[in-house]
Amino acid sequence: MANYTHDLIVIGAGSGGLGAAGFGGALGLNVALIDKTVHDYGGECLNYGCVPSKALLHVAQQFAGARQATRFGLEISGKADMKAVQRYIRERQDIIREHESPDYLRKTYGLDCFIGEAMLTGKKEVTVNGRKLTAPRIVLATGSRPRHLKVKGVEHVKQYDNERVFAELEELPDRLLIVGGGPNSCELAQAFRRLGSEVILLSRSDRLLKHDPAPAAKLLEAKLRAEGVDVRLNTEIRAFPDAHTASLVDDGEPVGSVSFTHLIVAIGRSVRTRGLGLELAGVHTKGDRILTDDYYRTSNPAILTVGDAYGREMFSHGAEKHNTDVWTNLLSPIDKKHKLNHFSWVTFTDPEIATFGLTPEQLDRQGTKYETVEQSFDHDDRAVAADYSDSLLILYLSKPTYGSSKVLGGCMAAPAAGEMIQELHLLQQLGLDYSKLTNKIYAYPVGSRINQKPARDRDQNRLLSPLTKRVLRAAYRLQNR
Ligand SMILES: Cc1cc2nc3c(=O)[nH]c(=O)nc-3n(C[C@H](O)[C@H](O)[C@H](O)COP(=O)(O)OP(=O)(O)OC[C@H]3O[C@@H](n4cnc5c(N)ncnc54)[C@H](O)[C@@H]3O)c2cc1C
Ligand SMILES: NC(=O)c1ccc[n+]([C@@H]2O[C@H](COP(=O)([O-])OP(=O)(O)OC[C@H]3O[C@@H](n4cnc5c(N)ncnc54)[C@H](O)[C@@H]3O)[C@@H](O)[C@H]2O)c1
Image 1 (tube, rainbow, N blue to C red):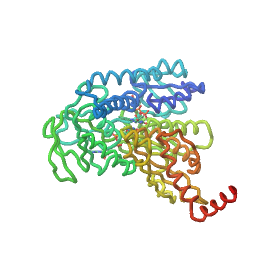
Image 2 (image 1 turned 30 degrees about the horizontal axis):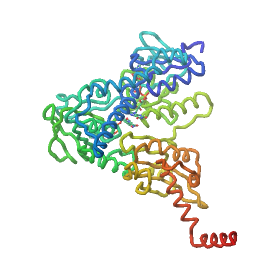
Image 3 (image 1 turned 90 degrees about the horizontal axis):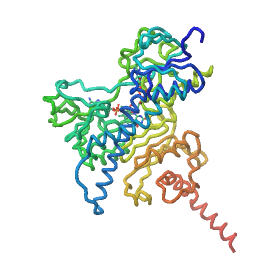
Image 4 (image 1 turned 120 degrees about the vertical axis):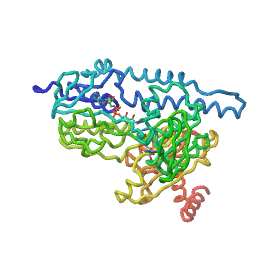
């Protein structure tokens, strides 16, 4: 410590940086945490990502509920007041912000919080506000930034990315064009449609949510279409002839044009590599990636990355996973390798699309034999009563050995699927048999009873084979003479 100003320096105070610095602070280490402005503390998730998008979806859900209630006599009219919606979102953000502010972090974790743009100026040195800080380890938690369209005429168009949506959009768009087919576009498309905008959702992929199973993504696509979103797949923007028109191509062939009043672009994200002084610290990059190994190390082993800066799973809880691994490695002589065996993610649309555990691609890659079980909600009493029986559960189960199978992964498309998959995900994480659910008594009629249905069906099929039925009949008659 003698030759360093700090034990650890963390650049970026988003999900990644808060976790990396917070744990060090909790251990009593002398940790410097740096972000550009006080408002940037909390990062993308708090300011322009998870929190505002989920608050927006919550408001949109109220509108959808009111619209459904017109079947039962409620009379409604009008659209959302976007200023009031943004006010609600900012109020919610401010509540969370209190626990992510530099003052709170200083008081609670003893962090040495800096406000200013940090630059690497040596192998173990960072400069902020003209002051040189040094530490044996530096964590880059500098995040990513939204990609933008680069087509002819784009300079005449205002491209709203997620930052601008939550910082600047004060009027409800009349006719909104959203580009991209990932979680960001799907969530925004449904939210704005429910608030009252006309929405065109355009993606160059042949389906939405390419990281989730196709049947689940199809259910969401059908729901978006049923709510009036104009979903156009295999489509790209070729040019903007004027500020409110996009000409489109499908497989390179012109397919007409669309007009819009507002344009949101959600076509993925690039890791931040510029302005960080990476070259001065011997940190190599390739395109818009920081080169890293499976142990979160950059080409300078004193400098680690977590969160979006690591360039792999870009989620807030991805950052949480990275920090768990990185801190294990910082504290022990045996390094933990990055593995994605027990991960999950949720797209918070209606239906929610919740994917967990190993995907078919991962299972195939590791040569694991598995069977796919698709469970519909058609005869689930809760789904019938609450009108969501067009939902779906997909499970990947290991091939049975002596009658028992393990849950390897899966996906659910249903309201609150993100909550409902949790017990399945825990079984997968603990490596427990799926049959553990067979005798569980659920309060009737909780939605998560659907998790048990395939397990019960399988056990019942086994139990009620002609032979066991004969044995059980004989047992009954013997016991009850
Ligand atoms: C619209 C949207 C919705 C999302 N919803 C979800 C969701 O529901 N669930 C989920 O898990 N994930 C969600 N995500 C993803 C999630 O927001 C990100 O994965 C997460 O915020 C990344 O955290 P991070 O700490 O790596 O980066 P960031 O939060 O981007 O933090 C990086 C920080 O570094 C700072 N910084 C950069 N350079 C410097 C410098 N030179 N000096 C000082 N500071 C610097 C920046 O100011 C920034 O505050 C969503 C993303 C978007 C865009
Ligand atoms: N609920 C959540 O957890 C959540 C919500 C929103 C965002 N996020 C995260 O934020 C990040 C960004 O999300 P995203 O949805 O912007 O990115 P993404 O990379 O997941 O999806 C981008 C989509 O845009 C399409 N696309 C790319 N270029 C295009 C073009 N020129 N024209 C038309 N379509 C194009 C792609 O085919 C893809 O469907 C992701 O890492 C995501 O996981 C998470």
